[in-house]
Length: 237
Image 1 (spheres, rainbow, N blue to C red):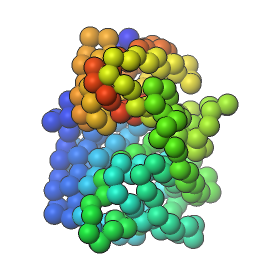
Image 2: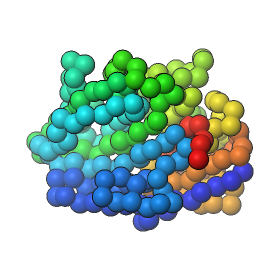
Image 3: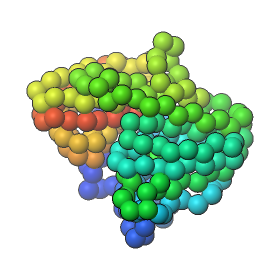
Image 4: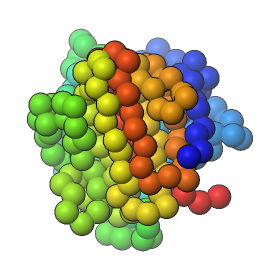
C-alpha cells in the first residue's frame, strides 16, 4: 500500500470575503506541482459562501462535477433547465459533457453554506450534459459505507461517467471499517470531514487527506467519532 498524505494546513487557500475556500488540488490562482490531481480526481474544494452570494453562471465541459453540502443550503441552476435547492444530506452530480453552464448560490441571505465541490475526469467525452440529485439519510452511513456516487454494478448512488465511487461514513470512536475497491487498480482518496482516524501508520484529523494506491483493500480505525468521505478513482500519470 502506497500513501500520499495531504495535511489540511497545506491546502491552498483563498478568501475573497464572500468566498472562503480551501483547495486540496491546484485550482484558480493556487498552483502546486505536486498537487495537480489524484488520478481522475481533479478538484476537491472545501467552500464556504456567505449569505446571498455565490458563483455566477459559468461554462464547463467534459467533467463530472459533484456538490455535497455539509452545512446550509445551496441554490443550483444550469442550462439543462434544472434548478433547485441542495440541503445537507443531498448530493448532486452534473455531467458537463459537451458543454453546460451553471450557477451555484447560497440559498440563504443570512447563514453561510459550506459545501464540497468535486471534479472528476470522465471516462467518455462529449456526452449529452445531465444532472441528477438525491437525498441520503445520514443514518445509512453510521459505522458503514453509504455509497452516494458510483458506476459500479450493484451499487446504489448517483451515476457517474467514470469507473469511480464516492462513499460516506460516520464512525463511532473505537470502531474500524474496511474499504474494498469497486474497481481493480483504482486509488482511493480519503478525506476527513471531522474527527480523527488511523490508516496503517498514518493518523488523519479534520480536513486531512490521504491518497491510497497499490492495494484494493484497507482498514480505517476511528480514534474519535469521525465523519469521512472516500473518493475512489482510476489512476493515471
